Length: 294
Image (cartoon, rainbow, N blue to C red; front, side, top):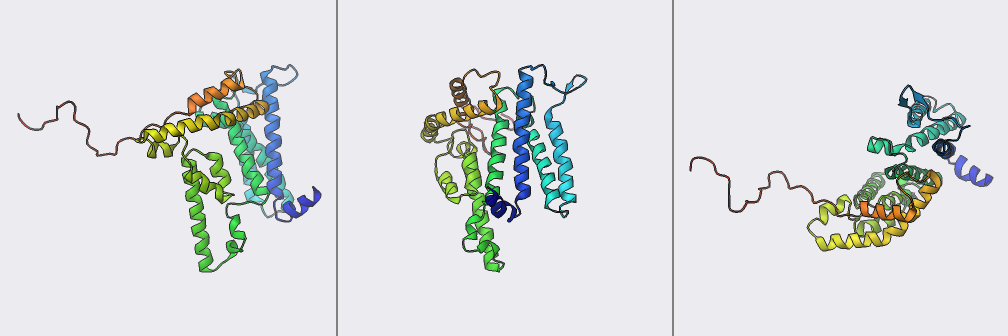
């Protein structure tokens, strides 16, 4: 462990990133412990903080911590790795408080203990995954390190780097448009996943299905059948982990019921795109609009 820390983290200047990750994990675990104790109404644990009749969400403290530590990082980035690492820890703590209530920001209402509140846990998982990959030394252009192309300053090298990055981003955009968020995320670091995700069938409720499958009912039904078949065990496993970490929502009594409810809610055909502006409207049973006198 010490050797990995010295050779992989410190030697490559990733100590601030590690401190950010540790601060993020500690902040998320502590706030989840706090809210679960509050939910159980434990007497010896302080309850929700209020200013009169207003409930102050912990997201507010997270925004303040992110703002202050971010200003400190911008101002003191030349003051040594120790100062930067300490500020990165505070930044990670604040980011955890903010993302723990990401669902509130997304839905613009308090859904912390509702089914939609699981969005916050998804956001936390994404942040942990991206930070972990960066900490391990992966980055979206790591394949170019094989021939040291990424550090080639020649016009040819710069052109190839730009084209490679553009293709990478375009494939990631296609995969995400197909509703495969995790494939697009990890594909940015492992390029073959992007090719697989771009060639595979879209999820039925994704924007890609709306654009490409609206007039192709057989393809849409195939996407729905495939989604229900393969997503069911994945959703059950995800809900189990979410309940284990974040607690069960008020409206969900069991993991199997929650999985079926999410499948029924999310695995639906995407709505057809609106008609292009200027497209003529269909005639209505022989009646047409007239102009001028009869």
